[in-house]
Image (cartoon, rainbow, N blue to C red; front, side):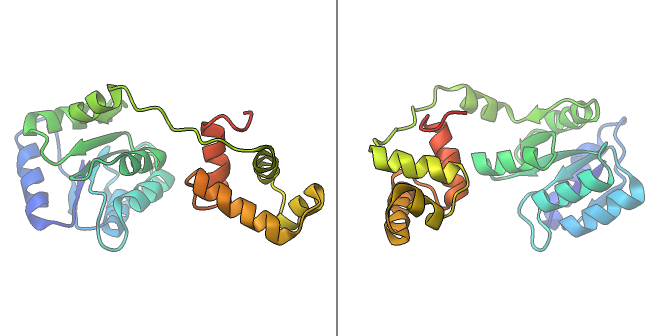
Length: 204
């Protein structure tokens, strides 16, 4: 296995934790994502314990590169941050697990073994949080014209094409689009369409 973390003390602590397990072999310790990619090329570890937020090449970017050069390597994120966006990004990049740095040594070793076997690994308290009922997404009301604009955006039409289709000016479409983005809390057209699908405004 390979340990990747920009904090020297964390790297040393992790190495000491895992040295206790006789069936686990540490092949390298890296301080950032670029070093991790090179180490994977050199040593071909079965499992990588990857910090997420590091200077230079971060854990998500490094995981993507590792999946390209060594798709059989299992990457488990190990970090102090447990927000949903970070968790989603590591799994989307090809990682198989997500653990917090306060994970007990025995549980950490078990997680490495599980990842080696191809199992997904997630900190238990995160699983409990996801299992809790989530608040319903508030669905704003849209009028017919807003729905027409939204449908046209989903079809990939430009503002000018939408304007021609609806017999209005491009500036009017631009204003309506901005209002839609505010209503649906979307920062761009792609996010707007995704949000509209989530809220049921667009058919799948």
